[in-house]
Amino acid sequence: MLEDHLNSTRACRRLRAGPAAPHVDGFADWMSAKGYSRSYIDLLCQLLATWSDWLRQSGLDGDDLVASRDAYATALSEEGRLRYASGHLRMSLLAASTFVRYLRESGAVAPAPRVPSALDTWPVLRDFHGWALTQQGLAESSARLYEIVIADLLEALGDDPATYTAENLRSFVLQRARPHGPSRAASIAVSVRAFLRFLVSTGRCREGLVHAIPSFAWRRLSSVPRHLEADQVQRVLKSCTGTSPVRLRDRAVLLLLARLGLRASDVEHLSLTDIDWQNGRLAVSGKSRRREWLPLPQDVGDALVAYIQQGRPRIDVPQVFLTITPPIRPLASGSVRTIAGSALRRAGVTTPSHGAHVFRHSAATAMLRQGVSLPGVGAVLRHRSPDTTMHYAKVDFGLLSEVAQPWPGEVSPC
Image (cartoon, rainbow, N blue to C red; front, top):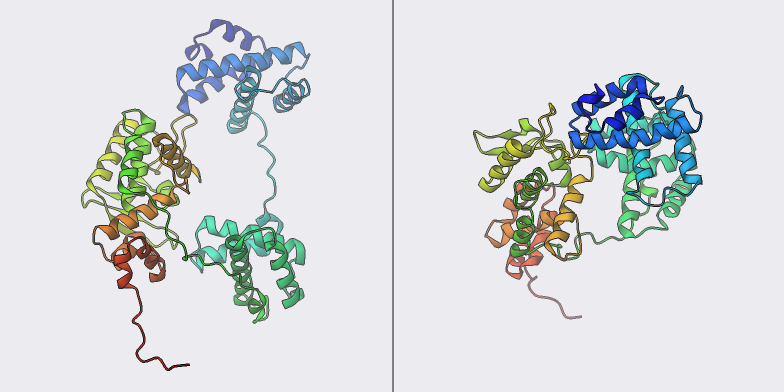
């Protein structure tokens, strides 16, 4: 019942007198089940009452509440009344949108029309997606990045590989890469090469076209790794002290990044069953989706226990890390990057990179300076190529002797 969740009796009366009345009881119960606090439910319902009042004043009967929400948005926009992101009317539009989401989830109105994706538009791209994940072990996020480029290729050259030539493939890659820097240009070339290999492996395309794709000079490992010093890492961790759910979660996230060098996606996908408490270890799949066990340091384990017991919302999902504000759900892609960036700014730490990956570089650097061998660092970071790990030797000139090649013997004079 609406009255069980609201503090404002006036808002209850306004909602029961408006077009949304048949659904407001279910809406309040739905928000409560989603984990919304009582105060936030009360606020959203008061804001929803503003929309309901507008419907009555506009003479709309509410037969199509989705269209009414859209009409409300249009009217406010045309009147110039959505100027402020936190303004009352903009928030009432948010409440109306949340109400429409409830109606769709409960089946009271038809679900939102599904916008066709690139995989729907191009069947060959859907086949590539499956091949990349199952045959090549590509991560879902990497496959999506490849598919952005491949969809452009299909749009430009069509979906009949028999028409592809070395000339038009090369022209596409050069044209597509022109606005970008070396790093992005190289990834565009990699995406097209991967697609051509898929076409060859499935008998759709003749061999040899992959050699027509140009290479772009990109010295990926030429710079010194961007990392934080030990005292800077401690300052960031100290900025997350406290017993609030958000502080407990963020501290556990940052410790996983800083102590084990996990990638942001590793943390976002970490599930409760990946933690082996008895043996002090956790499982990570990573880019190759090959499950590997890493040791669980004491401080990381303590932070995870504190978050799970005191800060994690009690909902039945396998992921360890969840959102703090309702609707409660697992962290979305990019959330860990945001958590890391916020912590760096809060701690006043200046770094060229305000993302999660700087902690991975910092973990590698710290291990090397503590005497861990390069192969040992590569094992913790799960590098597939030793060259990637050797990149970190640049932070300490003493370590360069491990990777330096011996000087050749006699050199003939010119």
